[in-house]
Length: 353
Image (tube, rainbow, N blue to C red):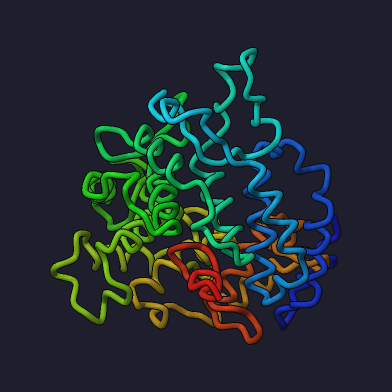
């Protein structure tokens, strides 16, 4: 494809991005069919993106609420809360098996932590009162997903367990303002054990430090109250994690082209402008890296069709488009709503206005 189609812009083209998100809201393109099982997460990218762009009023909020609530799994009776299943939100219709005797073993197998986080975040974004959600079943059965080492599986039938789902559990608890569904101390211990010798965090203890995993660790600890916002200005000696090497590891992720990489010796990528940039903002180190160079890198990934691509001169995708918008919010682009970084939604949505 002719790279001139993606000639770098000098401005953040908000109107073009709004058209892109409006198109995605109406009809997700066919190339996303293989991600249908993550439909709620795709919807989160669209709706949170619109909120970041200060345009959430473009959607029918009541319609969104009804659609999201239709994905919630409900136990048939109170004893079912102890049957080992997780009663959160399904990711899509294909994972929402009918709850009848013929499908008794399958009726709740699609409900998972990641989709539950996406569902609650969307509801919060459109102004729905989360006290109206059936949170008891969600929180009681979330305990089934926490493992003895403090980590979480995303689904009751068994799966990988790592920092991504510890973060989801913390975000769900924070959004619902109820921490009864997890052992916070055990979760903290697991997160601390994931910090590597170089300061970053791996997805599980002993793995290579990774930008996404490090965000999950820092954001979860912030939500759980174990690290303060802007921790650098308040002293780091009493922190539960090693802040100084974490800061150094994050700052080393900015490459010569201005973008952030997710791991050492990897290519820069639009999404890490949020994953790494968000960590630095939480630490109070947003002025320690070259903001102008990061902005220039992101603009090389801005598509003439709206949205952002993973790398320069490629077609945009919804995932990187959303994190491009989020990164520009962190860079305080005029006209964008500021983010509650640890929840992944705007400040306005987080405080419920």
